[in-house]
Length: 397
Ligand code: AMP
Ligand code: MG
Image (tube, rainbow, N blue to C red; front, side, top):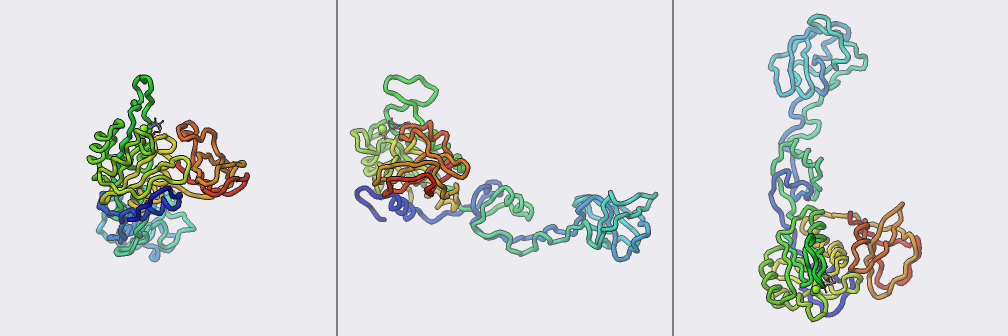
């Protein structure tokens, strides 16, 4: 494990996080539980689908080659979906059939019910376009027993789940989601819905983080709100070290009440880096103990969410093997001047193939972030950006 002293840049920080991630874990889950996960095995079909020659329309099944294209056919029976007729249909006979029903022996073609005239117990076919095999779904035309039908790494969309059900799969191996715990620190924090006393603010970080995790179908296993007291922080951290990812917020910079790094150290967490050349979120801390990744994010709410999307999310992706949001390059909608020496992560809004940098970028402000659909990354060394310059954009919706 590489341990860095002093401030590092964004790309070094991201690299150190990815290097610290364990190899993805696999779990066997039921089909519906797998929705939205990534498949961790190959799937071979265990059945032919359709499993038998099947009517694709409501109509009449008959043997095409023995028909002379003009004679009426005698209706000798009926077969509906879910039924099976063992009787063989003879020449110049036909069977009333419904969509999804198996074709009886002796038939290979279905004429739609809209294209016939019933005359007593016979039908007269009026369909010039009818050919042998019309309106029949052939056995195995979708999958053949034994055939490879899905590769490892496939995202399990609702359509993929439906397809897997249709070939009889009920359990499958997927990459597991990590377990995540949240600890927010700060004496000043009051839950929303209560009356604020002097000096208090509403606690919002646990909400932002939980919502961001929910957005990617993860529920935190625990949320603790603790005071700026070392003993309490240490006790809480210790109780949460069995999770894959522990996220703390607040208390991570250099004030007298910033007790998180020292508490983590006392819990045995090995610091991998502390402080990144970025704005917001400069005091970001990352460490590891056994298999647990520990992210301690500076308390300002915009820094918390920015660091979540930029650093925690890629670590989660390593577990789930899933790419969550699109990253792309887009032209800036207007000029922008920044301080060189820091990477800037800015709240942005995409519009007509351009990206707008929103107002109110300070790390305590969430009003602009609330309207954003992306985070822009402006390079550490650059100072002046011109309208039309291409910038890296990470979508967050
Ligand atoms: P800290 O990192 O503890 O110095 O906090 C930085 C700023 O973020 C302070 O203004 C805190 O009051 C604020 N802050 C810390 N934690 C939270 C939280 N959970 N919800 C809202 N604001 C917070
Ligand atoms: Mg604090």
